[in-house]
Amino acid sequence: MPTSTVIVIDDDPSMRESLDSLLRSVGMGVAAYASVQDFLNDRTADCASCLVLDVRLPGQSGLDFQEQLSRKGLHVPVIFITGHADVPMTVRAMKAGAVEFLEKPFRDQDLLDAIQLALARNRERLDAETALKDLQDRLATLTARERQIMPLVAAGLLNKQIAGDLGVSEITVKVHRGQMMRKMGAKTLADLVRMADKLSMKA
Amino acid sequence: MPTSTVIVIDDDPSMRESLDSLLRSVGMGVAAYASVQDFLNDRTADCASCLVLDVRLPGQSGLDFQEQLSRKGLHVPVIFITGHADVPMTVRAMKAGAVEFLEKPFRDQDLLDAIQLALARNRERLDAETALKDLQDRLATLTARERQIMPLVAAGLLNKQIAGDLGVSEITVKVHRGQMMRKMGAKTLADLVRMADKLSMKA
DNA sequence: GATCACCCTATACCTAGGTTTAGGGTGGCC
DNA sequence: GGCCACCCTAAACCTAGGTATAGGGTGATC
Image (tube, rainbow over all chains, first blue to last red; front, side, top):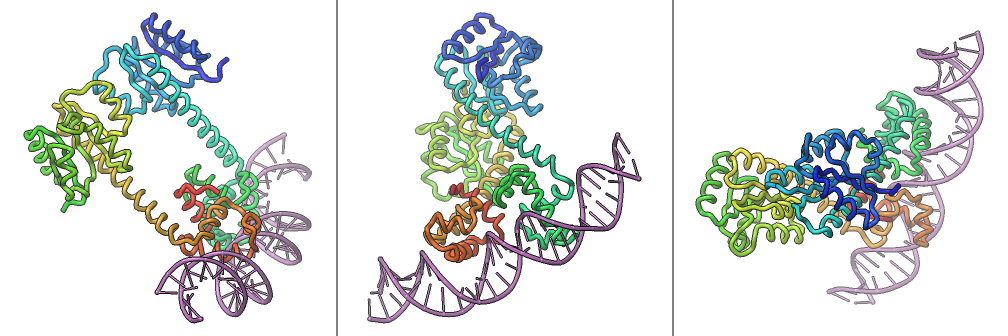
C-alpha cells in the first residue's frame, strides 16, 4: 500500500478513470468514488492523504462535505475540480481552506502540482498532530498536582512563588516539579516552556 | 482623523461615491481613488487599514497590486469587488490571502461584514508587528557576544556548555547572559525562550 | 594618547533548582 | 486489613544561576 493515497470523488465515470490512470502513472495511490456516500462506506479509505472533489456531486455536494470534515476537525487538504463553477462557490471553497480550485478541463500538470502541494501540507499537518498527541499523552500521565504546577513553572514563577500560590512548602514544589519534568520528557526548562505553549497552557 | 481608514480603489466614479457614503454612514474613515497610481501618489494614505479593490483597474490591476504589496511585506487585508469575475481570478485572489471577493452588485451588508473582518485582522496584524518590532529593537542593542549567547540560553544549554561551545569561562557566560537578559527585558528564562521563538532564533 | 565600548577573567557571595532518603496522611480497591 | 497511588514535608547535599567588585586586553575614534 502506498504511503499516501489520493481520494477522488467524481460522479463522471470517465473522469474517474482518467484521473485514476493519470495519478497512477506518476506513482500515486488512488481510490476513486462516485459519491461522498460511497467513500464513507468504504472503510479502507482511512488513509486519505488528500481529496480531489467535484463541487457538484449526487447527494452531498463537495462543498458541504468539505465543511462537514472541517467541523469534525478532519483537516485533510481538499482540491476542487468542477465543470460548472461560479464565483461565490469558489470563494466559499477557498475560504474553507481548499488548496486549489480547478475548472474542467484543466491541465494535468496543474492538478499534479496542486496534489503535490496538498500532500506536502498533509505531511506537515500529520507531523504536527502526532507531536501534539504525544504531548497530550504525556500530560495525561501527570497527577493533579503535577499538572497544576506545570503551567506555573512554564510561566517562569519561582518554586517559592508556586509554593505560596498553592499553599504548600517549597520543597514539595521541587518534588512535584522534578517528577513532572521527568514524565513530560523535558530535559530543560526551555523544553518545558515550549511544550506548555504547544499545549496552550495558561498559568 | 479616524483610527482606521478604508481605502477604496475603483475606476467607476458612481461606485466610489456610493461606497464612500455607505462607509461614512457607519462611521468609517474612507479615502477613494480611481486607480492604484492615484492612491500611491497620495501620501496621506499611509494609514490604510484595509483595501477595497476593483479587480480590473486602469493601469495596474487590483490582483497585481495585491501581489506587489505582498512581495513588499505589506500585508494589509484586501477585499475585492468586481463586475466581471471569472474563477481563476477568484482563486488567485483568495490564494493570495484576500479577505473577501464580491461580485457587483453586492449587498451592502456583505461588504460591511467583510470590512469588519478585515479591520479585525489588521488590528491583530499590527499588534503582532509592533510586538515583533519591539523585540527586534531590543535585540539590536545586544553586543555580538550577547547575541551569540541568547539562542544558546534559549535552547536550554547550561552556562557550562555554552562556555565550552564558545571557548570561554563559565563566569564570562554568566556576565554576558545577565546583561543580555536585562537588555531584552526578560525577567525569567521562560520569557526569554518565548522571545527567542518569536524572533525565530535557532541555536 | 586618551577615551570608550567591548571582551575576558577572577573571587566572593547569595539565591534558586534539583535529588535522595525518609517519613506521615488520605482514600480507593481487592 | 493490606496494598497502592498520591499528596505533603523535612534534612542533607550538590549543582546551577546570578550579581557585585575589580582588573586586564583590544580596537576604534577623536
